[in-house]
Length: 294
Ligand SMILES: NC(=O)c1ccc[n+]([C@@H]2O[C@H](COP(=O)([O-])OP(=O)(O)OC[C@H]3O[C@@H](n4cnc5c(N)ncnc54)[C@H](OP(=O)(O)O)[C@@H]3O)[C@@H](O)[C@H]2O)c1
Image 1 (cartoon, protein in one colour):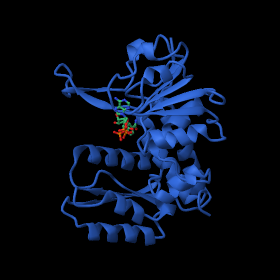
Image 2: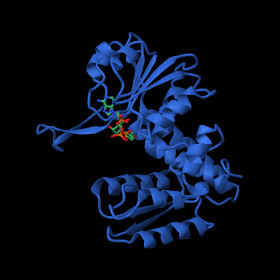
Image 3: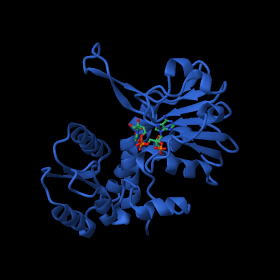
Image 4: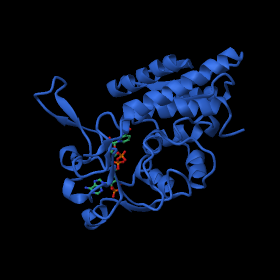
């Protein structure tokens, strides 16, 4: 039976730590951190995510500002909003909720965010600093994986780690973070993708397997070794008429086959995914305290 790496518990602990720090700042007469969010359009999932972020700010005692625009906003106008936020000394960090409508280049918008305020950690400067092992904002999903490993004191040094999926927001940054000279880290990492021949031949030898490919239940029990650490990043809505929502959330690992064999496993939901907001709050605190860029 595997130890469950419980994201809800760890995320709550991080939020409580941040809340304590905000109380200290307030009692010392300091300015509380201020996070702004830019939301474009009326995509239901984006609205839910942003509402969750605003609520979390209230919980920890941050100031928050929500800037909402309709889906027809021009790229030029959105870039002027980004500039205003860059110039506003009262805003410590901000996010532009993705995805953006098709007529707006997300890349251009992200590249116009001042890296100092880029608490999502998507700007190339922050990615580059992460690669060079310099202080940087680590984006939500890799942050969530590192914090779970750290909280549960999962040994990583010298371990063989296989990551399945090489996207620029999950697999690729995680491959860098887990292989760097740090704790958690010091792994020997193999990065698998859709062109990898015989993924099972790699995953079966690994001490740590990260499934981040977006293929529900791709990783089967027979693809891991006894006692392996399995980090399931995948979240896919799979239609299910029996569920009140009409769908169920599935990870990239087949939990019922893997859990009896693994040493540790993250559940879906309640594993890596719930760490996202904690990551954003953490980065905002770092921004307010000038811990990344002095
Ligand atoms: N927990 C969270 O907070 C969180 C955050 C972000 C994403 N996610 C979830 O994580 C999953 C991955 O997201 P993503 O944004 O990284 O996805 P993505 O951009 O679609 O990238 C998927 C990666 O998996 C590889 N891949 C796809 N099918 C494969 C297969 N059959 N065999 C081997 N490799 C395969 C792709 O290979 P190629 O490069 O060769 O195409 C690509 O590198 C999704 O379920 C997503 O919803 C969760």
